[in-house]
Amino acid sequence: MILMKYLITGGCGFIASHLVDSLMKSNIKIILIDNLSSGVINNIRPYLKSLNLKFIKTDLKKFDKRWVRYFDDVNSVFHFAANPEVRLSVTKPRIHYQDNILTTFNVLEACRKYDIKYLVFSSTSTVYGDAKVIPTPEDYSPLEPISVYGACKLACENLIITYSKLYGIRSLILRYANIVGPRNNHGVIVDFINKLRKNPKKLHVLGDGSQRKSYLHINDAIDATLHLFKVFKDSGNEYDIYNIGNEDWISVKEIADIIVEEMDLRNVKYIFKSETLNGRGWKGDVKFMLLDISKLKSTGWKPNWNSYETIRKAVREALRC
Image: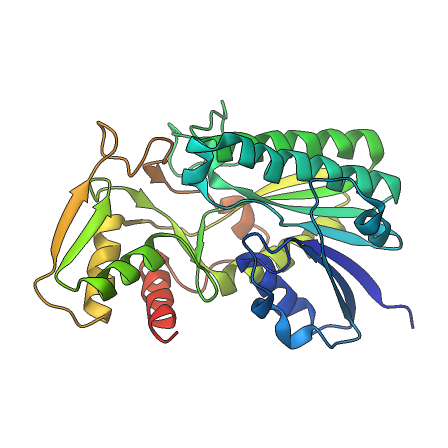
């Protein structure tokens, strides 16, 4: 029996390592590539001795036969390698160009070289920028990102669509909302917990606290990802784009309240610090984000937890670490 072979870039990262968890339950061979710049080897350590997983530590920014050759005989590529720090992209844009656009181009060239049939790309809600339609559907336009991170992801999407049309690589683009849960090492939950552990009386909050966004638990995100991959393969479409998120949203102030409650703290003083005139956490931060997931729901999938439940669940998981 010939096993299906998948290749996952950025496989030691937050979302992709959970994808590895799910795929390793099936009879699938996995090639995992990561340079460990933001990924953590412990995330996939239980599988390092498995005959069904091969880990390659290398940098995708250089088109090198030492990693390109592993695309041979691969059926599907899950391209999740990226620099996930949105705020960093504002101050150090070159890093995001290299870690996102350049690596995506190289991955696409490897896919073209070895006639990869399917590509799944981890994109982001930030491609919409400050959308004037909320909830925001996949066909919203114009797409005007306000961060270099969002602009790089959108450029990657366009490259992928073009490669789909030119070279027949059937591509699924997934625009994720804010994903939280175990192994997440950055973001508002991690930031607030770390700050409160250092000083349980004061919490410094980036922005005015009214920023409101949608959150999805990592378990839901992976479930939706694999569900949509199956739907997409059965559809016969050249390429497709889906939002993956929740049906509600929650403010930064409400997230802080949940964390304070779960940490059993009292009389915490919130100190808000806006780096922009309109109360954003930093220049380039999308203040309001809620994705329209009606297209995703039409395939028969829906989240198990809303944004409030997701945040509380993720906080409890983080506090147990």
